[in-house]
Amino acid sequence: MATFTDIVKTFVNSIARSKVSLMGAVLTTVTFPILLVAAVLDIMGIVENPYFGFIIYLVLGPLFMVSLLLVFLGLFFFKGKEGVSLFTYDYLKEQFSAPNRFAKVRKLVFLISGLTLLNLFILGLISYTGYHYTESIGFCGQLCHTVMAPEYTTYKNSPHSRVRCVECHIGQGAQWFVKSKISGVRQIFAVAFNTYSRPIQTPVHGLRPARETCEQCHRPELFHGDKLYIRDKFLPDEKNTHLQTVLLLKVGSGGYRGSNAHGIHWHVSPQNEITYTHTDTAREKISEVRLSKPDGTEIVFTKETDTGAGPAGKVRTMDCVDCHNRPTHIYLPPDEALDQKLAHGDIPVSLPYIKKIALELITRTYASHEEAKNTIATEIRARYRRDYPTLVNNNLPLLGQAISGIQAAYVENVFPEMKIEWNTYRNFLGHKNDSGCFRCHDGSHTTKAGEIISMDCETCHVILAEDEADPKVLETLRGL
Ligand code: HEC
Ligand code: HEC
Ligand code: HEC
Ligand code: HEC
Ligand code: HEC
Image (cartoon, rainbow, N blue to C red; front, top):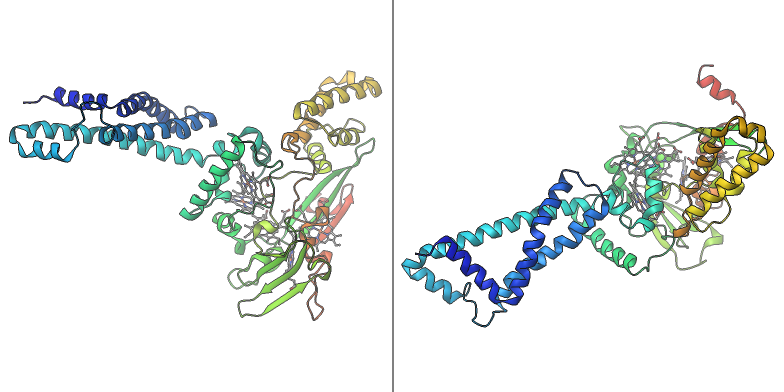
């Protein structure tokens, strides 16, 4: 009677007779333990490095699958000199019909099922962890380091830094999952062959309609009433004079439990579907805005000047990202970047003219972050040692703090390697650069009857203070 070792021997022999199988078997044996250990390390979160995941799931994993396939292909199709009869139909028939052979066959079946189960287990394990890996922040944001550095950096500094990239970029459901993986493969080729555009073009055309992603977490109909908006500014004078602008933003709601949609989030009420025609790729030139009500009425606002200009107009349904196009990749303008650092104390306000000098330094053109950082450091040191020697010598850490604050303002917003300068990406929330809300609310979009989309300042906010030192309204609110 055949022993278990015989069976293993037959199996190994048959593999050895086919070169293809042999190659597959060697590869499987080598990759198997590595994959197992690596997948366990990854699941337990012991190694957290995006390149580690890349090697396991996108190199070793597929290699393992291909080598398994080679083993079987070899057994069936590429037989060696003597021919392998292990799995042929006649062979099996003979084995099953001869009673004394039955034990051998049974063991063989056990062995093969055992091996297959083991392989299925490891395949399952790597597909599961591999799926999680390709959905991870490390894979999306850190693997292609230079390409994604701007998005990853701005994301890290944003309110959404704990939301995974895929929750906005893919969302739930199979359809967008498949789309994203196909587009992902294209992106890997673009990076490998260095054909991606610098900077990455926006608006992102393949982006899923925002209401299917943002609304997994936010409910527009519930939205809060008004929101206090405070903007700190520092003048480029000797004292870096601190001014504040205070607005009450009428965020409103999309309508909830009988309350009517009102304020800024009026646009996202189910009662108000807004579509618009834009004649440029940036969606800034809007020739027609169409407001549709559930009862079928439509109000059409047109702007004469833009009609017919540029390529044929494209129609788009307005959603969250037509205003919140920078919910997480927030690139600030130079002025505002510095104002924030000054307001948070990252740059000391006590240094004379620091706003003015910093603004001049960060708006120069540099070839890299390194160059910018070095220049900022040397210039700041040189200027303050020359012009304010006593101040600086009495408080050395002050200069160091100023330098790192100014460097941060630059490296968090400008990425020369990706050709992202100041103001490369527009922000549609508000009306900086005269775009944003004013793409429609510019007072020139009118209906035939002469109604206009309002440009009245009070439509969207009440200005409580504008560029004031110590605004009274803030004192009142703080109970001072
Ligand atoms: C809160 C939602 C959200 C999260 C989280 C998010 N993104 Fe985005 N991202 C967007 C939106 C919205 C746009 C579209 C901007 C546009 O079309 O103008 C965008 C645009 C981009 C772009 C195009 C270039 C640009 O700067 O606009 C890239 C690349 C990108 N995201 C990568 C990432 C990566 C990598 C992560 C994770 C590290 C991430 N995103 C996380 C919402 C998000
Ligand atoms: C996975 C959940 C999730 C998704 C998806 C998501 N957000 Fe958020 N969002 C949050 C959380 C959590 C916060 C609050 C962060 C905090 O205050 O710490 C937030 C905050 C915000 C804020 C307030 C930011 C501020 O300045 O305080 C805005 C605006 C916003 N999200 C818009 C969006 C938009 C637009 C999208 C879709 C492109 C989106 N979010 C998708 C979870 C999400
Ligand atoms: C017409 C433009 C517009 C549209 C469309 C829009 N928002 Fe807003 N949203 C705003 C403005 C403006 C604010 C206040 C901005 C600020 O905080 O500086 C705001 C505030 C918010 C906030 C923060 C509220 C708070 O109190 O901090 C969240 C969250 C938010 N929006 C989510 C969404 C989501 C989700 C959608 C899509 C369903 C959406 N918004 C559609 C303009 C818009
Ligand atoms: C694509 C065009 C478009 C854009 C962009 C747009 N709006 Fe509107 N908005 C409209 C239209 C159309 C109306 C309705 C006008 C009317 O009925 O008189 C409207 C109405 C409003 C109203 C009045 C809502 C009410 O209570 O009746 C507010 C507030 C408002 N928008 C704020 C904003 C803000 C803030 C932004 C920028 C963050 C913005 N809108 C961007 C098209 C737009
Ligand atoms: C369609 C809506 C809308 C209209 C009309 C509008 N604004 Fe605004 N404005 C906004 C929003 C939204 C913000 C906040 C932007 C943000 O969150 O970054 C803002 C911000 C501002 C700020 C603060 C900017 C800063 O320095 O941070 C000022 C000042 C301002 N608006 C003045 C005006 C004046 C003056 C008018 C009338 C000519 C006007 N706005 C009309 C929506 C509007």
